[in-house]
Image (cartoon, rainbow, N blue to C red; front, side, top):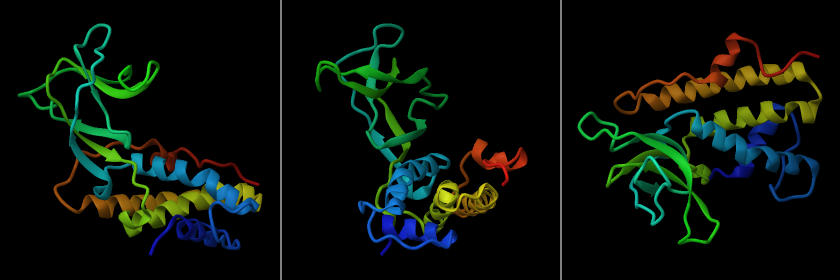
Length: 209
């Protein structure tokens, strides 16, 4: 069974580093894994329309309406990392819309909620969800995440910028493979340019020793 710890230990194996036993341990390596894991996972999820992370949902309008320009605000699920498309994107049902933080006083006087503001009266959403269970992720995604974590933690654990640059290249290659394999499962989606993956053409994240 995959776990956050096994993903982090895979990253540490790229670095030739001793494994950890738990993310909540107090040793330096565990703290470093804990520091990077969630942000690296969410960033990688947001880079691509991963099949395992795609969700579809009908949105509910909140009581508060936008102050001007739009008439309705629809609450976005809390696990939404990136909007793929909405039911009002097609030629037949097209409405302008924006993603904004809207005050929702039904929750608390100062509660802001991520919403889609529009003039449409109904709205459904396809989006990339924050997937936290490693067993729900594809094996190639987990491998890419481990490589990305290794690159992120390399300087702190090895003090080598050149090695970090090499691991960044390895991570980019593994992410590309995972994305390409994932995209083959079904009708191809629209391809978006990814600045992080394209960075290999203009240099790496890191300098050299």
